[in-house]
Structures are given as C-alpha cells and as structure tokens.
Image (cartoon, rainbow over the protein chains, first blue to last red):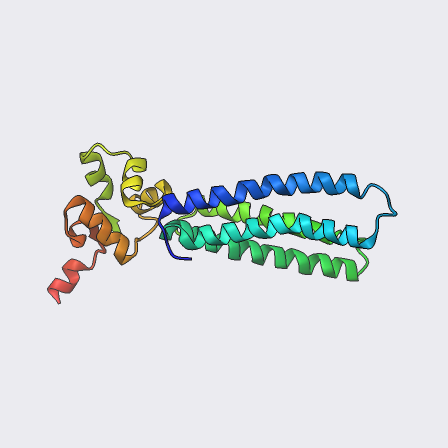
Length: 134
Length: 71
C-alpha cells in the first residue's frame, strides 16, 4: 500500500467498503433464514459465523487501506481516531469485565463489542473534527 | 504556524474544494491548514508553494524568522 492521494484513496475505499457492507447485510439475512431451527448442524453455524464476519474484516481492511493511502491530514485523523476508539473500547471491556466479576451485571453478549468499536471510532473521528489540532 | 493560504486562494477565486482538488488532499485538510489547526508536512508545503509559484517561507511563517535573523 502506497500513499495515492485523497481522490484515488477515497475511490478505492468506497469501491470496497460499501459492497462489503451490502454483502454483510445480505449474509446476515441469509444466515438468519438458514439457522432458524435450533437443530442446525454445527458446521452450518460455524460457516454462517465465518461468512458473516468475512465482509466485516474486509471492511476494516478497507478503512486501514484508506488511512494508509489518503492524504496526510486525513491519515492522521483516522489513525488517531482508530487509536482513541481502541482505548475507549478497552476501557469499556475492563469496566464490563469487573462489573461482571463483582456480580453487578449479568451476562453481556460479546458480539456488541464489535459494533461498539465502530461507534467509538465514529465518536472519536467527529470529536477530532471539532478539535484544535489533529 | 501562520500562513497566507486563504489569501492566496481567494486571490485566485478558488474555493477550498477547488484548492483541495488541485493538491489532491481533502477539503478538510485545506481548511485545517488555513485555520492553523494543522501544519503541513514538507512535501505538502512544497506542493502548495509550487502551486502558487511562491517560496515556502512566503506562505508559511513560524514566527521565528525575525528572532533568528536578529541572532
């Protein structure tokens, strides 16, 4: 991956990210239909889990590629937002873990930490937009 | 760092988006540089200087020039 300038980087990002999100939604719908019965075989459940995760992983890679190829200011903002969202998520994970350990809260679905990361990324990116420096 | 980017841009009647397009950076980058929120790297500063046909020091001022000259 080489810096390519903002225009090409954005075009390459959009060409990969949005189709992956469409595939992600379609896969969820297809897998929900396939796994309606509790008696679904293990191999099918594992395949569905991997198939649904794959477009998300490619989407994350598209974000990282965009960060690498875009202009320096966009790159700096994105990398900082990625780092800050990671820090926010790690803090949330620790807090949730201790709350569970001390029997304050019940079972928490691990799944939600994924969307939480992207939510944190969005917050960090927007906050950076109104910040004084990069 | 202070700069005259906004002045040079408006002299040519360019919008921030137009300048961003010419430099192949995001419009937010141009805005951040103009408002002093972000100092460009040397390659980008050279690209800006080249685009406007000026020297880097004519566009960007770190406020140290007078002090150093006096030293």
